Amino acid sequence: MRFGTMGILLLAGALLSGGCGTTSSTQEASAGDDAQEAAQVQTGPVIVDDNMSNLQLDQPDRPVYDSYLRQERHDKGLAMAMPDLTPYKPEGEKIAYLTFDDGPDDVNTPAILAILKENGVKATFYLLGKSAKAYPDVVKQIYESGCAIGNHSYDHNYGRLYQNPAAYLKEMDETDAILKSILGVRPLITRAPGGVVGHFNKHYWDALKKHGYVEHDWNISSADAAPNHPVAKDFIDNIQSQVDSAKAPSSAIILMHSSSGHEETVKALPEIIRILREHGYTFGVITPMTPQPW
Image (cartoon, rainbow, N blue to C red):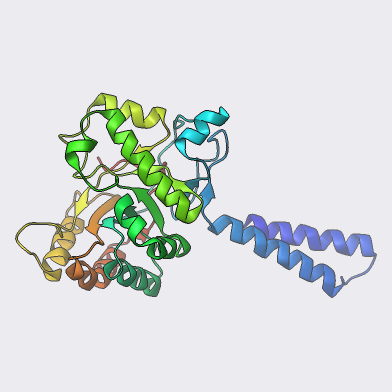
């Protein structure tokens, strides 16, 4: 609405300065181009500014990235700590955040992206640095699709990750560097492999905030990584039962996987999207202002 109003003001100004009831086609084209360009700015990713002061957004579907690595921010004397943000949770609105861990691969991740595009849905992909290095073109596809990318460690090695907060941050740095080498930007969102329960303590949370990261677990699981080889119908039934519940969250962060071996997740995804829409959910991507799942 802001840009429509701006276009009207520009047109009115042209009429007054020209002293007549019409404006030139050149002026009209210029105003239209300005409005179109502004609209494109509003729908693209947000690149965090030097002071990390532009993260309080009013749109849940715009990914957020940083053009600096953590060490680069430190060396330049730029803001590093994540500011306090008001979670995006508008009254009466239900938002589903589809999240896919452990990718990318060159089969299931592209198949998921195709389904998301067909359904007009954006999602969040928490990527492993090792896999991103192996499939840089798929990383670019995720980014160019308008989906969000998060940091899921280098290779999911609990023994290294959870020695202490410094070890966790080291893996974030390693994966960030790989992602920035591919995209020119790196994410501010992370997901702890296996989730934070049993892995994080206060020192991890403090370290993430100090160094500009936000972690999000999930509050709905497809259980597509269960050890008993579940199939697509199992994932669909899992999600159906959770959104049918009277306790279904209005901000639903849904855990799935996009790596090799998760072909059943690909099969289940169209029906999962249909069920969520049937229950009144729209779709967003994880950003620093996304509400925590608990």
